[in-house]
Structures are given as C-alpha cells and as structure tokens.
Image (cartoon, rainbow, N blue to C red; front, side, top):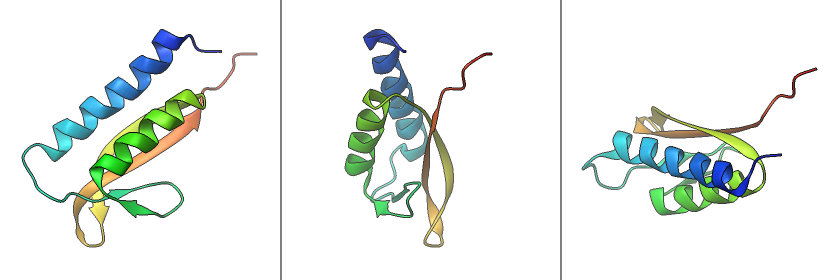
Length: 81
C-alpha cells in the first residue's frame, strides 16, 4: 500500500503533466476513462481523488471531440509475485 507521501506525489505529478500540456490554452477538455469529457478543474479533482483511491495516474495529450485535449488514465499498481 502506498504511503500518504507517495499518494500525494502521484496526483501532484499528474497535475504537473496536465499543466505542461495545457500551457496557456483556454478551455481544454479532458477525456476520462469512463468516456466522460470534463474541464481541467474537474479533471484535477478526478486525478486527486483517483490517487487517494490507490490508483497510479497518467496524463497524456490526445484528441477530445476533434480538438487537442487531455486523456487521463488510471490503473492499479501491479504487485510483484
């Protein structure tokens, strides 16, 4: 199980990746894994909530409704056998 510091680091890194992609653009959409398209503020909340639920996070630039946007992904950390 991840420590609180590791969890916080996950969402902080994801937020930094988000900001690097968004830069100065206005009204950038974010595609979540369930197909929802949200604004960046909602995406930030989703990233933080996902980190506290134990997910690892990845934020990439991609196409959302035919425009450059954010694709947010989350996945469980694999365990070594």
